[in-house]
Amino acid sequence: MTIKVGTSSWTDPTLVRDTDFYPPGASSAEERLRYYASIYPVVEVDSTFYAPPAKTTAEAWVERTPPDFRFEIKAFGLFTGHPVQPKSLWPDLREAVLPEHADKKRLYNSHLEPEALEQAWARFDHSLRPLHEADKLGAVVFQWPPWFTAKKANRQILEALPGRLPDYRIAVEFRHGSWLGEDDRERTLSLLEAAGLVYVVVDEPQGFKTSVPPVVAATSDLAMVRFHGHNAENWQAKNITPAERFRYLYSADELAQWVTPLRQLDEQANETHALMNNCYQDFGVRNAHDLGALLGEGLQDNAPEPTFDPAT
Image 1: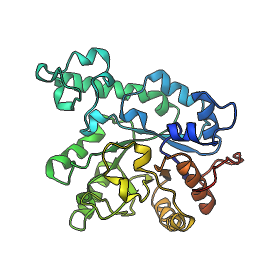
Image 2: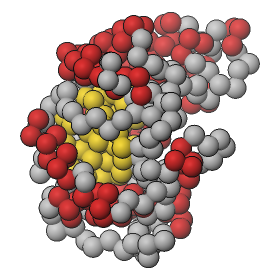
Image 3: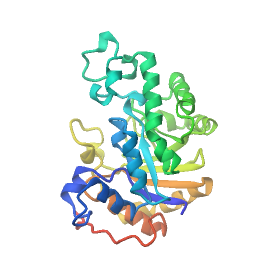
């Protein structure tokens, strides 16, 4: 299997609470992951964006999934220029916040002493070792914020990424269209290819200043597409949950339009991952199952037939 289809979460509260996707009895984290992995061969871990995982957690993920399963790990927000809560840091590193920022409710990487930031990178690396050693780490996904635009300083940050986590594949998702506009597109893709970084193709609402066009290309031995849906009304809405932001159920026709691009990507890469990020209720798992059926691959062999709620 060179195309793997999955979702960007298996634990979203709206999926667990509001649908019948998980069968009766699958009430623990272990049982849910085992069931999910019996159907889909890849998943993205979103929780690591908010706080680094414990190494023991990664060890449990390895034990609960088949040998050919892959995890995409979202990079800790501290490393992508996002603000994070102080409690998401390791306890001893909370003491390394610069004095002038000690009372902040949200911390940026510049608020830490340089040595502490280096230690944070090292610990994040250490926590992912079990996945890497089991050959289950697809890529560490760096999702950059909308204010991370195509300028020289940010290109230098991208070029330095491989040195931060040298043993892992690193994937890059942009949230500002300047990187893939006609003027910078080739330059951006060339930079990623030269650095050995995985370019993340996105399908998302268009028409916004930050909208990233769905440019189909592969820059590494892994190709990746993340499907965010087309909910333009909620795309930049304030004070809503991620599930509401990505609340969009793809039609069969919309998914069918991606079959040829995914096969083209797979011809350029050794492995291709397609991840549905429309994780509202069962929309993501439903569309991942639909896409796998259209491709004729991408799902686990002999997978159980999941239960999906009636389409709304």
